[in-house]
Image (cartoon, rainbow, N blue to C red; front, top):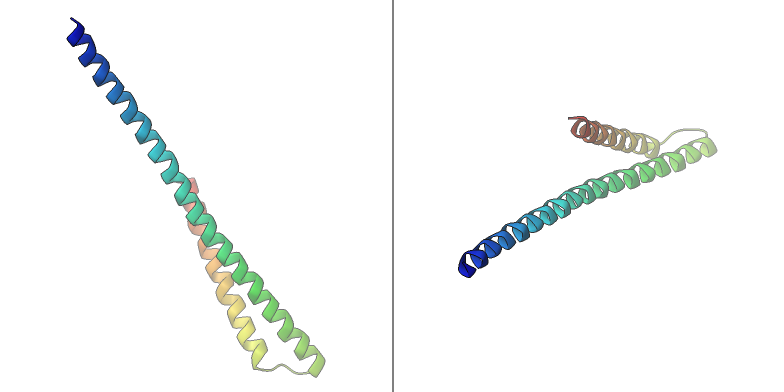
Length: 99
Protein backbone atom coordinates (compact mmCIF):
# COMPACT_ATOMS: atom_id res chain seq x y z
CA UNK A 1 0.00 0.00 0.00
CA UNK A 2 2.80 2.40 0.90
CA UNK A 3 4.55 1.61 -2.37
CA UNK A 4 1.44 2.49 -4.39
CA UNK A 5 1.04 5.80 -2.56
CA UNK A 6 4.72 6.58 -3.09
CA UNK A 7 4.45 5.82 -6.81
CA UNK A 8 1.30 7.93 -7.19
CA UNK A 9 2.81 10.87 -5.32
CA UNK A 10 6.03 10.59 -7.34
CA UNK A 11 4.11 10.59 -10.63
CA UNK A 12 1.93 13.47 -9.48
CA UNK A 13 4.91 15.59 -8.46
CA UNK A 14 6.56 14.87 -11.82
CA UNK A 15 3.46 15.99 -13.71
CA UNK A 16 3.09 19.16 -11.62
CA UNK A 17 6.75 20.15 -11.98
CA UNK A 18 6.62 19.47 -15.75
CA UNK A 19 3.59 21.70 -16.11
CA UNK A 20 5.30 24.43 -14.09
CA UNK A 21 8.44 24.27 -16.25
CA UNK A 22 6.30 24.36 -19.42
CA UNK A 23 4.38 27.42 -18.19
CA UNK A 24 7.57 29.25 -17.23
CA UNK A 25 9.22 28.46 -20.56
CA UNK A 26 6.17 29.67 -22.48
CA UNK A 27 6.01 32.89 -20.43
CA UNK A 28 9.67 33.78 -20.93
CA UNK A 29 9.57 32.81 -24.61
CA UNK A 30 6.74 35.27 -25.14
CA UNK A 31 8.65 37.99 -23.30
CA UNK A 32 11.74 37.38 -25.47
CA UNK A 33 9.67 37.75 -28.65
CA UNK A 34 8.14 40.99 -27.35
CA UNK A 35 11.59 42.33 -26.44
CA UNK A 36 12.88 41.55 -29.94
CA UNK A 37 9.91 43.38 -31.46
CA UNK A 38 10.48 46.40 -29.24
CA UNK A 39 14.18 46.40 -30.16
CA UNK A 40 13.35 46.55 -33.87
CA UNK A 41 10.82 49.32 -33.20
CA UNK A 42 13.41 51.39 -31.32
CA UNK A 43 15.96 51.00 -34.12
CA UNK A 44 13.44 52.22 -36.69
CA UNK A 45 12.45 55.19 -34.53
CA UNK A 46 16.10 56.20 -34.11
CA UNK A 47 16.65 55.87 -37.87
CA UNK A 48 13.60 58.08 -38.47
CA UNK A 49 14.86 60.72 -36.02
CA UNK A 50 18.27 60.67 -37.71
CA UNK A 51 16.69 61.03 -41.17
CA UNK A 52 14.55 63.96 -40.02
CA UNK A 53 17.65 65.60 -38.53
CA UNK A 54 19.55 65.24 -41.81
CA UNK A 55 16.59 66.60 -43.75
CA UNK A 56 16.32 69.57 -41.38
CA UNK A 57 20.01 70.41 -41.75
CA UNK A 58 19.84 70.13 -45.53
CA UNK A 59 16.76 72.35 -45.55
CA UNK A 60 18.49 74.97 -43.40
CA UNK A 61 21.54 74.97 -45.70
CA UNK A 62 19.26 75.31 -48.74
CA UNK A 63 17.41 78.25 -47.16
CA UNK A 64 20.67 79.91 -46.16
CA UNK A 65 22.28 79.51 -49.59
CA UNK A 66 19.10 80.17 -51.55
CA UNK A 67 19.37 76.92 -53.52
CA UNK A 68 19.16 73.19 -52.97
CA UNK A 69 22.12 70.89 -53.29
CA UNK A 70 22.82 67.15 -53.28
CA UNK A 71 22.37 66.97 -49.52
CA UNK A 72 18.69 67.83 -49.79
CA UNK A 73 18.05 65.07 -52.35
CA UNK A 74 19.92 62.39 -50.40
CA UNK A 75 18.32 63.45 -47.09
CA UNK A 76 14.87 63.33 -48.66
CA UNK A 77 15.54 59.87 -50.14
CA UNK A 78 16.80 58.59 -46.77
CA UNK A 79 13.72 59.99 -45.01
CA UNK A 80 11.38 58.37 -47.54
CA UNK A 81 13.15 55.02 -47.17
CA UNK A 82 12.95 55.07 -43.37
CA UNK A 83 9.32 56.21 -43.56
CA UNK A 84 8.49 53.18 -45.76
CA UNK A 85 10.37 50.82 -43.41
CA UNK A 86 8.53 52.17 -40.38
CA UNK A 87 5.16 51.99 -42.15
CA UNK A 88 5.80 48.39 -43.25
CA UNK A 89 6.91 47.44 -39.73
CA UNK A 90 3.80 48.98 -38.16
CA UNK A 91 1.57 47.13 -40.63
CA UNK A 92 3.27 43.82 -39.79
CA UNK A 93 3.02 44.35 -36.04
CA UNK A 94 -0.63 45.39 -36.19
CA UNK A 95 -1.58 42.53 -38.48
CA UNK A 96 0.04 40.04 -36.09
CA UNK A 97 -1.67 41.66 -33.09
CA UNK A 98 -5.09 41.49 -34.75
CA UNK A 99 -4.83 37.89 -35.91
